[in-house]
Amino acid sequence: MTQERIERLFLSQQEWEAGEIGGLCIQGTDQAELQRMFERRQFVLQFFLGFLRPGQLSLALVPSCENLHTTQPSAWTVDSLTGMPAEAFARCLELIGQDPFLTQYQLTQLLSKVKKIYGPVSSFSPSVIAQLGRIALRLSDDELRLLNLSELSSIATFGAVDGWSPRQLSILFSSVLNSTKLSPNQLDSSTLVALGHIVCGIKTSDMQNLKAVELSKAVLWLGRLRLLCSEEQLQVLVGLLSNSLAFGHIGSWGPEVFIEIGSLAAGLPDIAMSALVKDQIEGITPLAISLVPDKKFAVAFNQAQIRTFTYEQAVAVTEAQRAALSTVQQTALSMVLTPWEDKPVDFRGNYSSNTPPLVGAADGAMICYLQIQML
Image (cartoon, rainbow, N blue to C red; front, side, top):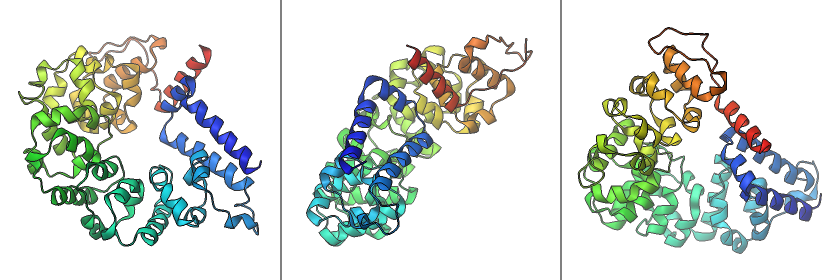
């Protein structure tokens, strides 16, 4: 297992994941399994290159930028990454910053490397800021305030990063306003798209000043994100989208509107959510389902509504949400997850048979995987 062979192995894996079947398998894999898959790749590289063997000279081995594109930055040790020549590291900074498997400690070490090359944070150019990606998570509050976030490319880089704390999101939004010299009611759809996760750093009082029209134009992108907004923030955003200048009254929304707003549908008021009909429910994305607060989910969705869920929506229901459901609601969910058991239930509370067990998300993904293999 030379380095060349390891790179060929990694490339073949990437090609498989980019293919039709591989893409489906990866899409249905939870974060824990993705982490385990990464750890296997990391072990293969570090073991066969000698990083895990005491006394090996390969501890001084550093990758080229090309090596990182072929393998993966986080598959290497952080000492190898920080030991790269400044020019090679700079050429691969954006790739390194986008790696989702780098630990907090590694990100801290990489940020130190960036500072050695480019100087203090206050001197970072918009080009450097736009390449930081997840490395920026390790910036202090004071350093975040010093950033020049006047260009959309810089804002978009940070807006695409998840993992910010609520405090960091608030600081970042203030930095955007200070850098662009704009007020919340002056933000257009392009800026809102670039903000991404940073939208959750806007105070609810300022959110109410956003333009409903501009938000409705940006929601197709924002709705794809797992936004960590509070329930109150999401309700304000949904209120803007129900403005007559945006999508209008919630009761008039068709499934296409729910598909478009994506995760923001989790912010629907309890009363509006409990009044949704089958066609509307079909448009709610699985991501939005998973983001509805536990108690709200149990109160807003009755058993008849849950029975209309698609399999993908039912699998997205979290363990905490299931635990908050009544027995009848859990049975309705089970009927969607395991329709082959064909155990009808009287939704007034009288069961015609024992309640079938719920299928976990991991079991559902495995069933999906086996069905793919049988095609």
